[in-house]
Each structure stands twice: as structure tokens, then as C-alpha cells.
Amino acid sequence: MSDDPAGRAAPDAESLAEQLFDGLLGSLETMTVYVGVRSGLYRTLAEQGPTTSRELAGVAGIHPRYAREWLEQQAVAGILHAEADGDVDDPYARRFSLPGAHARVLVAVDDPLYLGGAPLLAAGIAGALPDLLDALPNGDGVPYPRYGRDTRDGIAGLNRPMYTHDLVVSWLAAMPDVLGRLRDDGAHVVDLGCGQGWSSLAMAEALPRVAVTGVDLDEASVREARAHAQGAGLADRVTFAHTDASAMAGEEADLVTLFECLHDMADPVAALGAARRLVRDGGAVLIGDEKVAETFVAPGDDVERLNYAFSILHCLPATRAEDARVEAGTVLRPATVAEYAADAGFASCDVLPVDHDLWRFYRLTP
Image 1 (cartoon, one colour):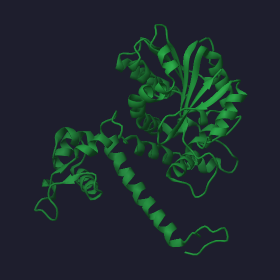
Image 2 (cartoon, one colour):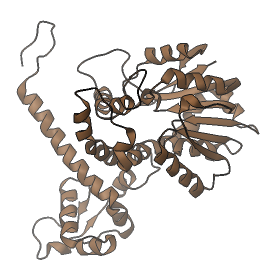
Image 3 (cartoon, one colour):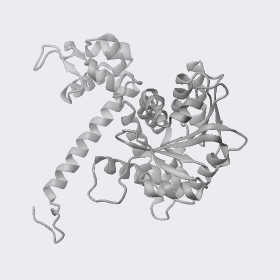
């Protein structure tokens, strides 16, 4: 590998070919995990224990030949354990099991290591690729609903464990004055860009005196959030509104939250302006958004690569479909957040001391 004049290692064909092959393998195996998540096969294995192809087929309602091929593929990929290697008289008699550690990743939806939402998100984005190609020549957008249920469920599945385990004890704990207010009678939170509502429900579950209003522009997400609130027995304290965050009015909140949604908003300054007007004296706005580099650097690390891929495939096209005033994309840098906050009239925008691999947290004070 030769060096370029700037002293950086010059790219070579073999390294790129290897990177693309690894990506192909990862993509295909991710799709097989999608099959296991969507069809409930992992959950069936977790409940049944060591299972043959025919047994899995009978319980899960799939054809035995598909069951056998999927089980063997998953074992070859190292996801499942096969009790017998090599040839057997009847391959349908071989038993497969889901290790407990892997069940945490694929079945336990509230586990901090759960990643069952990842293949759903990947599949949702892949399904919209033809629309993205059509949008490229004229700069058109791809509406968020076009990405479908897989994308909604994928995003919710990836974020739900963080909300369950970290939102209150880590993120809100970094603002002890605000957290103290939320323990009082009459406390109110407005959760902008709430998606399927797991962030709203996590706050209500942990803070029994808080009422939460979740807001989202996607009608299907709001419908699903309401169902989740009913299922959790929290519909008396958690309500959801299908509206534009920038149009919010008439509410008063001790805290307004925006989790992983500011970079997707067509008019983020207007949304933050609405948030500022909602906050009571002494309250604050909490933003959680991607932990990208502070300046452009290429090549980037894995987090930067992940966020840029999401941006070109999903976040930027979805934002452009809303006649966006600005188009940040997923890569929303701290200086841009501070600029938005100042334009919206906030007195300060501070990065909170929260240790997180993927998100950076900002406190905005009116």
C-alpha cells in the first residue's frame, strides 16, 4: 500500500473488496436474523429449548424444509447451537438451541443488549431504495411512511432498552434540578418526536407523579404508542398527539424532550422555539441526538460510518419529503445544535456529562 502526498495510507483494491465482501456477508446474515425475529422463531426456540426442524415447524407454523435450512444456516453463522455436527441419518432429527446469552440479544426486548430491531430497520430502509433512486435526480424526498412498519419497529426496538434502563437514572439524573421537579405533584413532560412512545412510557413508569404528552408527526407511530400505553396500564397519565412539534401550543411542561428526532425535523428551529414556549420557569429542554464527530473527518470511525449511512438512506430523504427549511441529515454536529438553540431564543445550550456510545445529550435553558 503506497502513501499519498498528505502522508495518509492510499486505498487499495484488495482492502475495499474485502470490506464489501464482509458487508455482503453481514447483510445477508442480517436478513436471516430478520426472518427469525419477524416469524417468532427465536422466541419459539427460547421457549421450547433444544428443538428439531420438524418440532420448530409444527410450533411456529412453517414448512419443515424451511425450518431445517434456517436452523442449519443459523448454526453455521454461530447464532444457534447444533447438538450434533457432521452427517446424521436424519438431518431433521438434529436438535438446535438458542444460547441464553444470544436470547438476550434476539428475544429480550428490554435487555440493554437487545438488537432484534436492527434487522427490521435494515429491511425497512432496503425496501425504500427504489424510491430513493427515483428521488436522486431532482432532490425529491422519500416520505417517512414509505419506510413502513419495519423501520418504525426497528427504531423503536433499538431505542426501547435505552429508555427503560438509562433515560431517568442517567440522562435525567444529569439534570438533578429538573429531575427533582418531576417527582412533584403536577409535573408534566412533553416528549416531542416520541415515535412509538417508549420514551414517554419509560418516564411515566419511573416517575409516578408525572403526566406525559407524547407528540409525533407520523400517524401510525402515534396509533402504536397509544396501544402501548394501554397495554402498560399508563393511558391515564400518558397521552399522545398526532401533530407537528413546531405547532405545539397550550401545554406547560417542566421538561420537553427530543430524543433522536431533531436531525429529522423539517424546521428544527421552529420546533425548538415551540419547546421553549412550552417550558415553565425553571424547566429545561433535553435533546438526545447522534454522537457524531465535531468536524468532518474521513475516513471516519464506525459510529460516523453508521450515521452517514443512515443519513443518505433514510434521514435526509425523509426530511426532504417535508419541504424542509434545513436539511441536517443524521450527522447533526454540536455546533449546529447550539446554533439552532440560539436561533430559537434559548439562553444556553450545554452538553451534559452523560456517558453514551451513540448519543450526545444537550440541556437547553430558556
